[in-house]
Every structure is written in C-alpha cells, then in structure tokens.
Image (tube, rainbow, N blue to C red; front, side, top):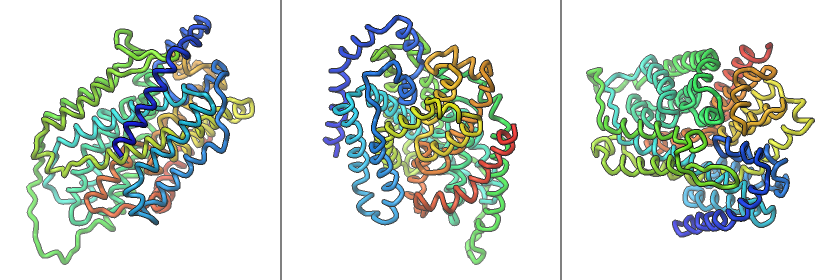
Length: 501
C-alpha cells in the first residue's frame, strides 16, 4: 500500500514538473493585466479555478457523468461500515485512492487539464498538513478532570470548547477536548455525547474568527478582514449554540444518568490537571504558520506555477511540528490519551478520495452558478441553502469558495481580486455583506450535517470508536441526529437572519 501511494504521488510530481514549462509559456503569453490579477490571488483553489474558465479556454469542461466516482465514494463511506465492514475497514484506502486516480487521470489524459489536479493536490496538502499537525500536537496534551459528570458540566465543556475553537481552530479544539470529554462521561458515554460535540465544538463553535474553520480562513486569505466574521456571525453563533446547549442539557438529563444500582461510591476531588503543557507551544507555532502565505507576504518563498504562488514553507513547518511534537511529547500524556495515528490515517485516505473526485461536482455547480440562469437565482436565501447543503456532502472549504466566487461573479466582481473581495465584504456591492454572511454561516454550520462535511468530524468519530463507543453509520448520523436536531436549528437561523430580510 505504501508503494501504491508513493507511485501515485510520484506520478503527480512528474506531471507537475513536466507541465511547468508549457503552462508557464502559456501564462507568459497572457496580458500583464491578467498576470497581475493572478499574482494577487492569495490562495489557490479548485473553486477559484472553476470561475476562471474564461481565461483558460484550452481546458475542456468535465462531463456530468464524471461525478459518478464521487457519488460512489460517498455511498461507500455511508454503507461500508454498515453492510460490509470487514471489506471496508481493510480496503477503504485502496477504494478512496483508486477512485481519485480515475478522475485525476481523466483530467490529465482526456481533458488535458493539469491545472485542476495540481490545485486539488495543493489544497489537499494544505488540508492534511494542518489537520495532522493539530491532531498530533494536541495528542501530547493530557487534560484530566476529576469531576462528576452532570448535564451542566457537559454543557460547560461543550461551550468552552466552542469558544476555544475560535482560537486554535475546530480541529485543534476537537483533538484537545474530545478525550477529556469522553473520560468525563466514562461509564455512561453514549453516541449523542459525541454527536453534540461534533455539532458544537467541531463545527459551529469556530464561526467567529478566520482561524476557527477552514472556509473562513480561506476567505481571510482572499481579502476578507480578520474581524469581519466576529462582527457579522456572532448573533447566529450565540443562537445556534444556545439552542443546542439547551437541547443537549435535557437529553443528557434524561439519558445520561449513571446506573443507580452502581455499588461503588466514587469520591471526586473536582480538580483539574494538565500534562504535556509544552505542546501548547507547538500548537501556537502551527497557528502562527497558518499566516505564512506567499501571496500575502512577499518574502515568503513559494512554488510558482501557472502565474500563481503555491505555499510550501507553511506546510513544511506544520509537518515538522507534527514530527517533533510527537517525538518530544510527554509519554504520560501520550499513554493517557491512548494516542495512535489511525484517526488521522483514516482522514488522510478518505479525503484523498474526496479531493480527487469532487473536482467535477464543484465544476458543474460553479459553471451553473456563473451562467445567466444560475446568476438570476443567486440571493442570500439560495446562497445559504446552496452553500449549506453542498457543505454537508462536500468538504465545506472549497464549497465556500465556489459559492463566494459565484456570488461575486453575479455582481461583476472577481474572487481573484483582493480589493474586490474586501469591497464585497464591506457591502460595497448590492447586499454583498449579507450574501457573504449567508455563505459563511452555511459553510460552517452545515459542515456538521455529515461525517465528511468538515475534517474534524471524521477524526472525532474515529477516536470515539477506538474508545469503544458505538457510533451511528453515515446515514444513521443524518437520520437520527442531523435531521431531527441540527436541521431545525439551521432552519431557525435562516428564519431569524435571512428568510424575511
């Protein structure tokens, strides 16, 4: 399997290197104005590329049937653990990578499109470097809470986690607190505990800062002011968390009682212990490195490709943190957390498949949104539900960029122009700040609808299962929790903030 992955990555590298001269020649033949616009693009993304097709007419659009591998992967993620668990557990890496290779090869050999796969690869490297570094660094921090599990104690931890998500990201907060949350409820930990943790800490909590959730950070790099999310998202953030906290409190009060026939009487000291605090320094390095973007800071080295800059220093720092934070971690913290690499391994392989196969789906959605028919449908309501629904089944970061690009294009603005993005955020277009608010909230909130909507969801699920907690299947998660609990909250947010405006 390692040889298979190595060959796959090597093949990507060969195409990347071999096509640089050709693409650079094409880029140099463009006007200086176009080059300037490309250089100003602060990040590279599949979504941005989708909306730049007018400048890249040498690329053919993907056919509609090419979304089949993506749909097949989603179906297998949903049904594998339920109906053919043994096969799925042993072969999901091959399935995910194999389907991604099919789509990537079609782009390379049939469509002659190197640009899309290279961007997808760059985004995946950025994605997995951040998640892996946060996961491994936080794994060396052991939080021990010697306190009786009560509904109020659980609600407090969830709300604290939601707040922390804005400081170290939903991934950092999830990895830091999921194990203490499980230990706090030892003896009666149930699936609903983990699901509400995913809702509140792994997703909705990180709505207030660009650091909080990947879509918001991509928006920040595009030109949205740092404090824009705090200024516009806090009312919906409070409402959503308040509703979920109240619902969880009553569910936990009814179902969270430890068996009353338990003979052993436990005495709690109500003390808090922290082991491996030095790993907070590693987390700080990861968060700081996030801002080392070559398109924002000129002196940061970059790989230049197709008139754009690809970051690599940031990813090297993150992966170095992942190695050294584990190498020098407090072993008591590692053992106390029962730390292992399986959760991040599962995320890494599953999202290879998602990033590789979702290119056609994003392209089709983007092309329609930019068409005259699609542009007429763009309102704050359609942006909220469109961004949200797709964020639940696609990774929410590229979905966010895709709909932001579509919303801006409908008003004659370009997502590749930092000044235009800032003007869009500052409401210098028709209701543009309101549309951006709909996109931002939907991408983050709806990311909790499925296990694959946001990166931390899968890791939290994997850690819970390794702790012996029976988690619902992909469809079970949606039917038992997302639709009856989360969807009404999302509807309430829509009614309060968008429907009648």
